[in-house]
Image (tube, rainbow, N blue to C red; front, top):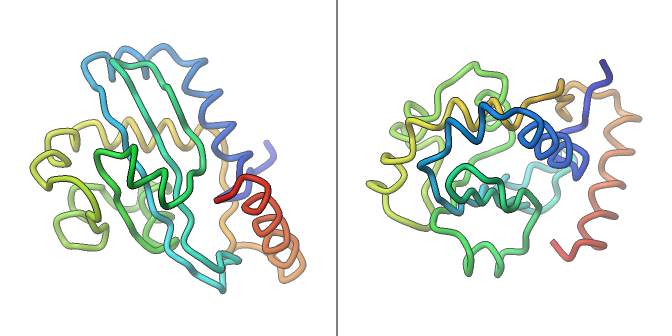
Length: 164
């Protein structure tokens, strides 16, 4: 299986396709309606020159949106904005850490919304992580210098095209 580069449109597209193809996600999230945004903090060594945000909107189990968004769009649409460094998100996506633990320790910060609200949806965190990892992910710290340079160029290009 070919790995998909983190954090690219291809990753979100693969995740959305995996979500739509697996009815267990709709079943597990059947009672969940939320609009989340995740901030991936700038990490130039990873090819992420500026913070980047992506939104995940779910309405009673239906995935309405999984896409990169602008800062303004995130603030306007999201119930919750959660932020962390790329290495912290990597640990979560690789299932080397748990959301609730990282959130309570402040390694994942709440920038918008209520802590109580986040803790109410936290039981769904493992399923959500599973929905974001239907394919193998290649993280920038695992890339060669050439691959990282290519990623850096690609990230700048798609961010400009998407206005994010």
